[in-house]
Length: 447
Image (tube, rainbow, N blue to C red):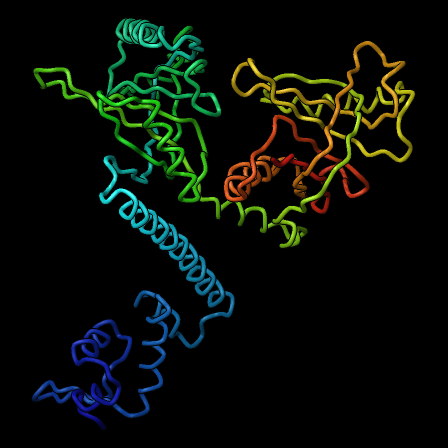
């Protein structure tokens, strides 16, 4: 037998650690002197101790190590514990990689400006909130402040009459995809402290709506002082997110912060942008077992000028209206008289100028060789010749948003290319009506 000190030196483990493992029943001495209390260990215990140290090095807690040391532990449970640890380490690695990129960004800024940024961007979760809100579209920048004051007064009066209690500062949610000074679709909201059971009875009272604003797992947050331009702060927040490989994952928010005890009106605005790491979208796309890893990167091709005739949709596709239009278009394609033999189906998407935020045109069509003899309610759209990046969407329609997010929020910002106002989808024999192995191709013009 070996005294605890000798065993400690032999195993390169402190006496304190051995005593701790004894208390947890991970590694018991083979003998304890009943007169002195001195602990003795056997050389044959070294493999068990090495197993403990190896599992600790993998990141397992001592409670997990204790379970893993059980001789009769089923193999399924072993796999569960190791899969869980693997996932934890992957998440930790992503977090540290993100932190490393932010440190690198600071170093670049210090080299360029010789100082830290005037305002810090902070990543944090946002809690679930109960709000009373009015949604409106503001078109003139000069009238924005007056319109907001009017919305606040309406909400405040309504809440007071309804006996609801404010619980925080005013909150503005932007429902436009991007911040736009000329046209802002916003929701002015008052945070409430009342219980959900009471608030549920208030639903449906127009123009004010009471609802739950869901929690956000991660948001990029920036404080903007009253003396600063709010639009500059919002631009800085989007720029920071792009540089640090985060992409918008929800509506931009503004939280008006002020000290009610202060004698002079001094306020801050906290700009909050829900974000998600671009790596998450890559993981989502690669999770499809039918997607080949090489399909993450697009093919760059030269595409010829093409004329498409078909049925037009205009709107925001909030209720998957485009799927319905495809069904109508498939029934109308027999009316086209100059369809190119062997043509593929095209979904031509155009972002028009001067329309409300989020609205776009989408044409479901076929390639034609002539623009004549076209039924009145069908339209012609021209796809210009040029260089295009071709991306592959694999699987269900529900995942299409992730594919487009990867294209426009991850790949394009890093590519150095600028997108045009038109892109299109091409459906050939690889399209199988959104089965798991179905494929179609998204063409994005490059300039």
